[in-house]
Length: 302
Image 1: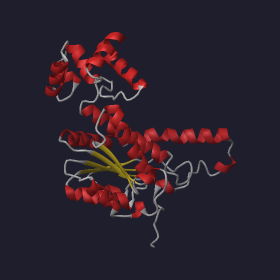
Image 2: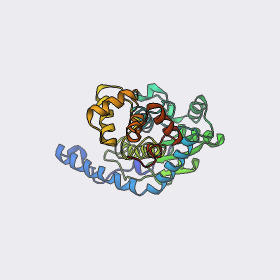
Image 3: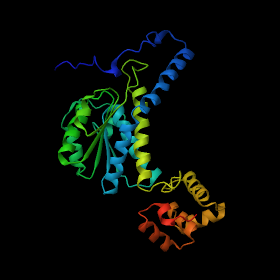
């Protein structure tokens, strides 16, 4: 097996601020770690123009019937799966719209699958199994910026004609050469040398939060700053749904609850019914004509 050169990777360098980590008090270690974590948001800020381009492309893909597909290995893959899974209850999307793939499959969410991330063919096969199309957006995630699983998948996605983006935590990352929209965030050496679940993982999570949340705003899943397509799958979310209706319409609790029931627990529909004084059927028509955007559906009313 050939030697892998990690010398030029920021994520593998030793942090000069923590060389005596094993001698620090708990308080000292917490303070140092907190100071290191504060660098993450600043590093992400430097990449906002690149992140904006990825979000614009994601919205375009979703609007033409495509999907947002994350893929990665280890922590990077787990973060993609997490972000994809949370889109379902938060924005009421089908599980097939935002997909998270991890090298080694579902088992790899909790247990490392030996050799999976080193395969140039497994990522491609995972996309083949998804019936990848040129409408889709594929985001490859790799803290090191060199994961073969991700590179193989990106190369296949490019062949299919899908839009490709990457999130790496090193500059001049290898995966950046395999995508049209690379994001490279440099948070500096990790608090614990090489442990990319720390600052790198935090940076990736922040970027994924931006991509999914702002993309969902772009396809009408948000009214003002309210998640109006939330799915009320438990008692807490039922109450949150009613509260969202109250906040969007200034209705009292009983009115919001009544419209929530009348709309068959469709928060967005209940809001349009209230703001336009419409029946359920008329409100649905307004939403359809308005491409599922509440503000377009109400035509400036409310």
